[in-house]
Length: 223
Image (tube, rainbow, N blue to C red; front, side):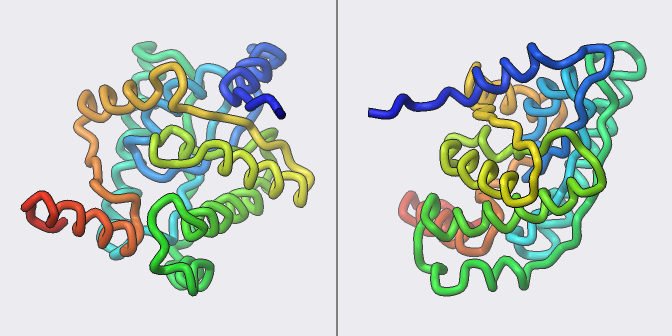
């Protein structure tokens, strides 16, 4: 039986081999501020991080805008703390990708009725990670995603997709499973500390409908 990979240890080994005086550059796909809070706190100590915000799955447009603005607010707060020596790490950059919901609906066509964690989600992962890989063309040592921090996301599948795309483009994928070492717990603490907007569904209308069905079953109001 093939031994299950520990992506956190693989990441730590890459960090150990890096030069702290000349940290590698990283393009980090971010899904939202709460998920990226711990990832940035951790990664900015060892990498020169630029966040790439590309999430065409998020709907409606107002929800997308709210999430990207919150991401920018968090990064501005972190950078201010880094400048004033209140936080360890390298300054963090951000690039906002195009908002292309049509591309998301094309990618998941025929899979709309599958539940969260299904092939529909895998197609969505691939769309976002491929776009991130294309953005790496501007010059980064690695790319990866914050998505592995979520207990609802399949870290093994995300790394599999990321590595395959990296191979296609001749790039370096940074392995991760950010929920390890209490990463998800820390993200909740940071979200509370910075008053971050935490949404109750992944982002797409399909996940929102699923969450509303669960809320209705508990007698709660819809999102």
